[in-house]
Length: 356
Image (cartoon, rainbow, N blue to C red; front, side, top):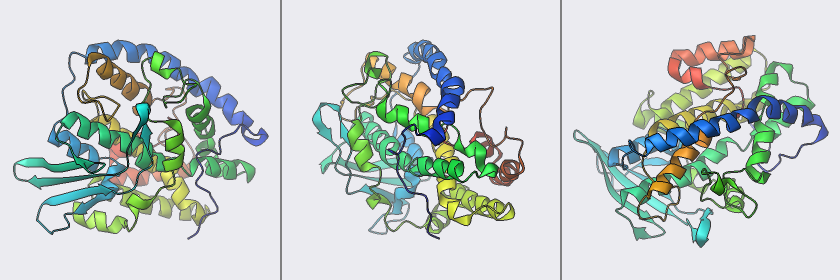
């Protein structure tokens, strides 16, 4: 069913109708980043002594437990237990003039665990596990994960402009968060006005390339959620996403919410939250945020840890977390109960909006 919600992450200006959301964000959510920065700096120093290099299990685990799972296909030559992840067209750029144009990975899953068989980036074969993991992480958070943000701004404006009271909590934070990401000097993205690199958590992705890549859906062409449920099982990450969408659809029907909002709301709440959760669980490793770094120096490891703690991990105000579990309203509680039937731990991390 066509949706009236447009996919625009750059539609994040503070217009009069959403000004109150900016004030709410600045009062309740923004302070968490300043407080967490101190924690991140101290904890990142500790992590320097404990983090290890990525292994094949980490690489495959990250793919299978984040929205990167949407790209997994059975091997084209039909070999049993072998899978491929292919990106043929990418617009992302990293600092120092590097461009990620394409990448492909082939791995095998068997009785002895998982094995990365081949990885290429821009047509060049790479064996370095640091670079493989870093490239996949770079692509995931700036392309595939970013797509879960796409509908949020327009969805929030729809909720506010049409006074959709039942979805009020789903209007919080998202627009000011995106404004900060794209325009604040504290943004983790790389651009001339950013100071995040001096604060330890700066990322390698060039801001303009993220905006360009946001609507590039070529890697997802032909994707059918049902296929992934059948090939990886209903309890795999992709399977849980598919079941969660069905649960949301049923709950929306019971509460008489416009079905045209299904996919925007699904991405805005469930997909975004679960993707952050999966990514943070599988990425606490020693690797550089810049995919073209051959090794990972002490500073690069510190920089990565700072980014993971401040940006990658869920960062919520405990007094106003906006998780569906914490919202004592019929729609959100109904959705929470349905998601608990799929996975109780999963249900606990789902937020009503893009909060981090």
